[in-house]
Amino acid sequence: MPVNALFIAVGLVILLVAVVVAYKIGFTARKKSDDGKIESAEAKAREIIDGALKAAEEKKREGLLEIKEESIRTRNELEKETKERRAEVQRLERRVQQKEENVDKKTEQLERREQSLSAKEENLARQKEEVSKLNEQRVRELERISGLTSDQAREYLLKVVEEDVKHETAVRLKEMEQQIKEESSKKAKDIVVTAIQKCAADHVAETTVSVVQLPNDEMKGRIIGREGRNIRTLETLTGVELIIDDTPEAVVLSGFDPVRREIARIALEKLIVDGRIHPARIEEMVEKAQREVETMMKEEGEAATLECGVHGIHPELVKLLGRMKFRTSYGQNALKHSIEVSLLSGLIAAEIGVDVRLAKRAGLLHDIGKAVDHEMEGSHIQLGSELCRKYKESQVVINAVESHHGDVEATSLIACIVQAADTISAARPGARRETLETYTNRLNQLEEIANSYKGVDKTFAIQAGREIRIMVVPEQVDDAEMVLLAHDISKQIESELEYPGQIKVSVVRESRAVDYAK
Image (cartoon, rainbow, N blue to C red):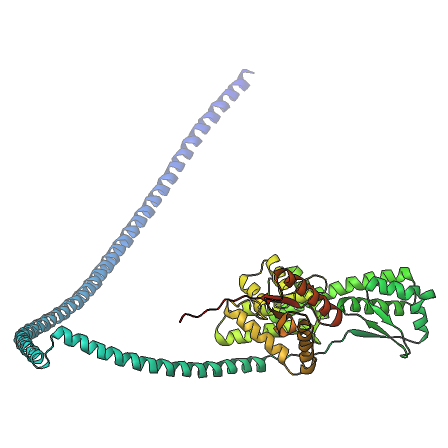
């Protein structure tokens, strides 16, 4: 045991010594290896530093070269710019010097001219003095010869000149008036002819009857109905007379109101197509026809405004314009007549430089009273002016309506244009079917009726038969009898004559006292 322990102890000591020796040997070897690596790293670091220093030195040299080149280039540019500016300055200096020389020359010229003008002024002053002296001498000599002072001579000369001028002015004015009359007449004719040529309108003669075609003659009996109740109902609802005679397959509708006649025609045609003809059905169809006619009138009025280029008219006036489609004047359709007057007014206004739109508007509305003269009392002129005032038309339009037949004096050129256009439209060949003979007969009848009364001195039918003016003898008819006379004559005209619209009866009684101073 002791020996083994010794061996073990010795082995441990040897092992410990071996570990220490091995550690020292390893440490020494590692230290040598690290020293070699450090030396190698230091060598590489010195090489890197040397390379960096060389590169920096090269960069420095390159930078210095670039700076030198840039400085040389900049200096060259500055020298070039300096030369250019110096040349520009020299050129400007030369121009300034030239201008100064020119100014000096002009100054010298002005001075010489001023000296010359001064000399001329002095010469003129001397001449004026001489002329004044000579004029004074001439005036004194003339006064001595004529025996008149200068003021008297002046008045005499002015009087002579004034008389000569008056005579020449009068002659010239007369010549100019004659020339103006000739030229104005020619110009007016040219304007009217041009307007007529530019405006083309259709002329349709209207009648007071309408004919409705029947599918067969048996339909006549159905229209009449049992004991005539159907025809009585239709006549009562429409206010139109149905004439059923021997004319094959036709019924005639007679009536002076074209609107009612159109309603009756449409209703009868609908009844014929429907086949059911009895009072209740007749009433229904008449109502439908009335609505259709109202729609038709509105559409016709709108079409008329579009055709004439007149806008902004009140809807009620538009409807009344459409109603005029069913109104005639001596056979001429009132709506077509109004459209034609509107177009003619516009053309004439354009020729003479007046407001074309306002002229067209006045021409379109000038006969608007004819749309209601069958229903309301008064002439179509009075009714038309009232309608225009009611629906806020301009004063120019109202005056054109009132004056287109000469009842009121025209206050504007447009009113005169409308009057001329109305005459042109009515006077077109074929526009109105009433002959001159018929027209003159009616005027003669009016005058004969008035002349048949006691106390009537003279009778004049004026305004195309729309008015008769009666002159009475003051000694035979007093003021109270005048009223009765006008009433009696108007009643006789109503009972004996047929005429459109109304006729104004005016009785005039005049008393005069005449004396002479001797």
